[in-house]
Image 1 (spheres, rainbow over the protein chains, first blue to last red):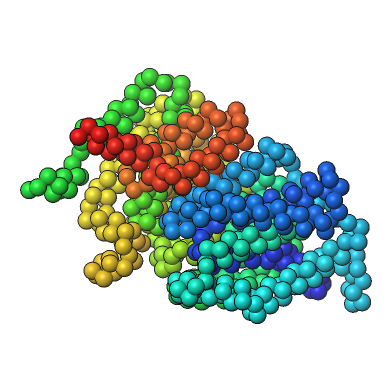
Image 2: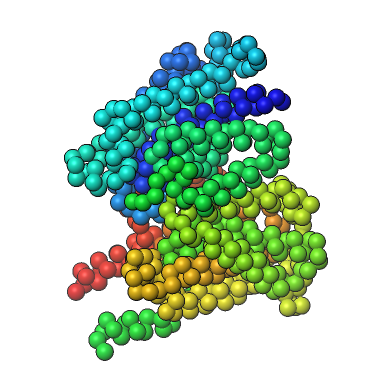
Length: 287
Length: 327
């Protein structure tokens, strides 16, 4: 394969990783909450999309929007009822709680929909190839890259130049100081949690083409999402973006050249990076 | 001495009820000869959970990669038997403890410099790395299929492994568990164990009083790794095979669940947890795997939210309530 196609393919899967993981990075950065169930929201989003398209005849984009809203609402209910009780709890309790939640989600989906892999039907305008002038490439991958980049820019602008974004940045850097200055971190967290889970839902649907979609999704990709977040740094949108692209490209290349056990390199890379900088490539020391 | 001081000074003394688990263990051998294969798996899980209790319960190191050491032990024994024909069980246990302990020491020296999410991820990555290595090194490890059909020499040249009835396996595992338990119990009540609890409860203060925090963490991590390696070795020897399932996230999460259900940081939590978990699993998981997963998930959520000290914790608080109402 030529380098441009490899780069494009890697970017496309990197974008999926970014869309799913970015919410996790922000919520973990805000509350220091170890949320292993984040991938579960991505899976639920994928299932909402599949079911809405199959049974209600929704087309692709409205189904995506529905998944965002439905999963965001569901997650905020969970957050207020359950997560909020464990903010001050030990890390171990958070790990247990969220692993339990993953099991519940997986079992619920298996019982409700079935254990088989689901396929997200793409609309016609996203199928086939697009001629970029210098190369012909899969339209869907290109669309993913455009959508991911647009999202990244939107989030970055939201972070850097809105009052809401400033509050999040303040709370990530120093939660207690932000609280003393009158930032309602609890509410801030609920809102970002909802948005983050909603984005994960969209990512789950968009990425079904690449990552697949079945009840074991949350556990299978847990390590990937966590690597992206911990390498990118907690609460760093740009960091997560770079980390996601890096891992996306790396994974894509390794799957082509070392189809057997190429993931070893990703684990080694993550190990070395985390040893070198425990707070991630772009994370800040302290707190 | 006041009552409290006497209680504190004598808390490492053996109490009569501490004999009960071992009496029960021997009783099971005679009472349920058809369930010894299952019993052996329970004993192995107890040992594995006990090793995790040292790091997680006593030293407060949250790890998601403890199966790395279980797997290291299991594969060590398997590879020695398959490639070198060294299939003496006792020698296998020692070799497994040595290899797993060495991996624990090496990774502990590097990993324990971090904490929180980074530590969680690093333990997870270490395990995933070993899993991939076992998957890739097919010439040595059997790759995806693992190493089926291993056979081992007689224990001490006297008792052969019995693939059908697990009679020697059961007693062998019981004896090994007892010896390891004595080690863990001695460690926990030693001054070393006390300083581990100190590190768990207040890291800053332990640094302030000049305790060698890092060295103790690394040491307990290696000891725990060696014990987990022994558990893995028992697994391979008793079942006669080793495959990738000994190294996965499921096994790591599983043993953590066992320990938490029983109650961590309390020695007997591993026993209660392993027996409860595996009995329920044995009944439910085969018949209704999805319902089992759902129930397990709900239990975990409930435990994290309401019952942080597991089954023993619930019993403890009930007993406290009872004694208070009697007074």
